[in-house]
Figure 1 (cartoon, rainbow, N blue to C red):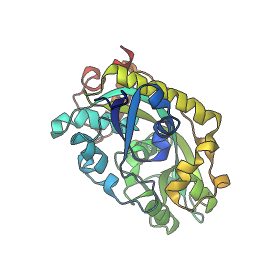
Figure 2: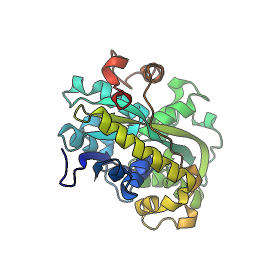
Figure 3: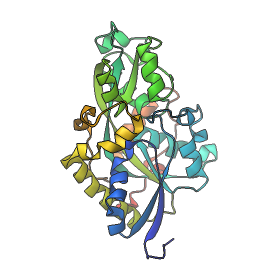
Length: 305
């Protein structure tokens, strides 16, 4: 579909600034328009906004708001952590959902941190053996917690729990209701300001998923715009702090936001080796993802055809 100005109309979803910053910047800096795109972003509830509800935490991932909007045709493209996109693309058809394919390894390298309370007696990852860590189930904080802790304790000793949104999770850690939680920016900065202890940090690479309605040239144009946006963010990350400050509504001043954690790169093809490595890792945890998928089933790098 094209607009009166001759621009290709595209609708995508966005949940949290840290994951979607390249898309937000590309829109606001006019980079999509330069590529001939009229890109509309539908804000869907994440866990990072102050006062956020729990729509993104429902037990059945396909009952969550973003997934529901995509399934109903409200958007044709979304991005999440690499593992979250893998789970949704692999399991969509079997669950009667609208199909999607992985169309790129995305722009955001979102820093994630496992954090303990200011008065906690936990100082090293080994102390989290058989101790629940608060995460968003089947989202980036869940998968990165597994990735981080499996280097220190056995898989069967890793425990996760749902303690709500980032705001609720931080309060649960503060009160000692959970020993630790996994957070991303701007909540890592909020936690640091309030005296919480960062136990360890890693990153959650994003993947891009799209319906068959988005053709290769359109996706290629989107990814070119995101590439330029990534370069702009990396050159001056604190210029874009307002996207994050808006999410925490006064809990941080501009100079308190740790913009050095932001890192973005150009979207690139999702390779067979990457699929095999990621899917095999997910299958190593019981119940993390359905079996039986293949690279051909899940991936379509048509932006580079």
